[in-house]
Image: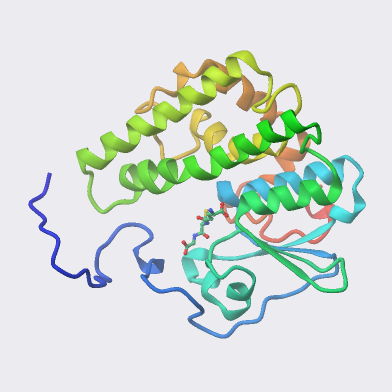
Length: 275
Ligand SMILES: N[C@@H](CCC(=O)N[C@@H](CS)C(=O)NCC(=O)O)C(=O)O
């Protein structure tokens, strides 16, 4: 606990610290002029291999694996630590200045799509894949897709931020968000105890949205928190995470726009970039 007393009016303290302090600011919009590159494919993705970024590259690789040639894409690297998301070209695609952002140039008028959940839904509908059409299955899939979009900020912006990124360890927020993260893992575990995939018997965009976050968490890849959160308790989530991870398209998709030295590729412009 601290004895912080909020002032009458909040003002921007750029010295507040923490891992992402240098890119956080209380105003929206571009900070500099910079056009985005455009490659040869109709789909142009501007992204980074964070869990939100991986969702889209995994879906694109799954679509290509199914034989949808129209899903060929250029994936350009947006270095959020360097502020690329505040360039004028990026802000024109996503006024919220966050990766991933997609431009579809396949029609007469280019279409922009931002928010990873919207991008997954857009691509699944465009190619008629990974989103069931039967009404009950469709509703179940979108329910879990939107569950992910609403839940992950508590995991990433809440738990991950205070456990791994904040300038000091504070018991109150770590407790609060560890509790919520474990509750979310239990939601998934109970669901996956009775269902092969998140939305039923079929692998869908709900799995693709949830896996990079919660699959990554139970596999010990997020925030160094596997032991702290006792992730081994979530056996059904682990079973599902391993099954998703074994898919070749998932292994390809998660390497795209990855900046670490392992198997990552900074940009992807052709299938051969990942071969
Ligand atoms: N709800 C958004 C969240 C996207 C998001 O938070 N992106 C992060 C990286 S994972 C980002 O670009 N952060 C840069 C910033 O906040 O300036 C989505 O799912 O697309």
